[in-house]
Length: 178
Image 1 (cartoon, rainbow, N blue to C red):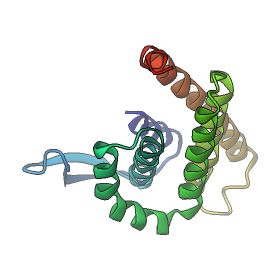
Image 2 (cartoon, helix red, strand yellow):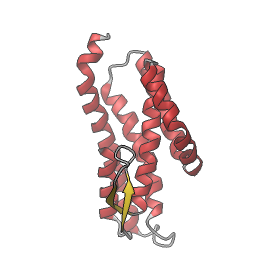
Image 3 (cartoon, rainbow, N blue to C red):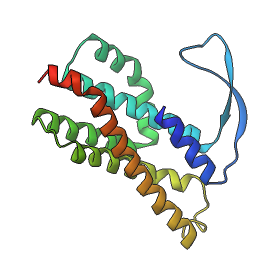
């Protein structure tokens, strides 16, 4: 899962307190599982909900269907709660989904441009994650700013790569659908 990778990456770059906890997974709710939790794992979990809800909304725009409608109903309450906490991130992803839909309707096959759209969205969303880990007096050091710029670039490039790999994976089904 991409989100797990992002949480691990940020947790390893920034020195944050991590606790051991037990948590019930929504898919396997019968048994609590051991987890490591910190500010980045919580943030990424919330971003995962924003991304999943955005993907469901994109599927509703593209195809409709019972699966997307059901997913929308299931995620709606959780999404609203997380949107209140992270309105900037939710708006960024919503704008990305809307722009992506416009490009898809226009039958764009410029995967590099579409990848850059997703990469830039990830870059912008994860700018907020950097402020989670440090006091404000530390955030202005040259080393911290350099680290943040490098991570911003990395999220941008990873976002481009994720989009292009996903597009490559979908190319056969896209060609069948014209």
